[in-house]
Length: 295
Image 1 (tube, rainbow, N blue to C red):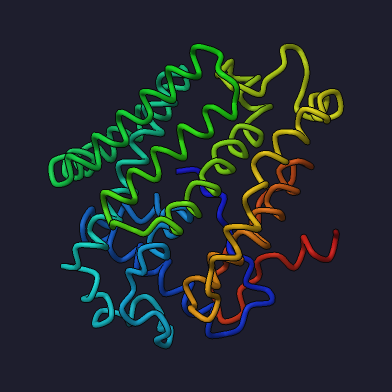
Image 2: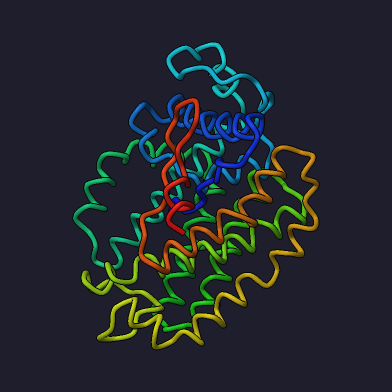
């Protein structure tokens, strides 16, 4: 997927950081076991959100151990159907993104990646045909909307519909969590297009936000009223969704933090053209310090 859901760990408690790390590592372990060591390189922050929504981790507050010492802890992810589905979703969403890049003529890198992960893609499609069909049909509809010149918010809605169908088919999550997924998925598609604006202009790739002959900075300056209207629409449901989250549950606290901190901060970074913070896996993760100090 896109990789924009970066958890801000700077002010989180050690317990909450541990829960996020264990979900992140669990997703990585599931990929490693089901699709091989190389699949760990495509681990998506965004797919970890699905794991949190489905509450897949059976012992999310356990002490963190270095990866190479976690053989015993990894076993819980090997045969668990929920984690197997999650790893397949990661693979299948990557495949859809590759197809999208190929359709937009950014083909060389995408085709090479396709070759590397071809076996994993076939395995995921074979084992989870319903999930594969949801993703394939959803991206087909998104491509049709893009090619028809549809408004970007309509495309955001279609992407959100795809993610909701996927999560419900895989995990039967409840309506409140589906609504959470809807609002963050709409933002996710939009912010990816805004972030890729200048690259898409250079590469001649389709982007519903692109204004011919101007850069992203110029577009933001020229169309700031339209951009404000888009963000107002995308953010309008955030407070209502946050109000339904019981943050005494660690998974819900993390979901709350995504709406309350990660999305606003990432949005600001994309608007000013800054690189997104990375998770550094050590005792005290250095994620947002530089951003917070400079802003």
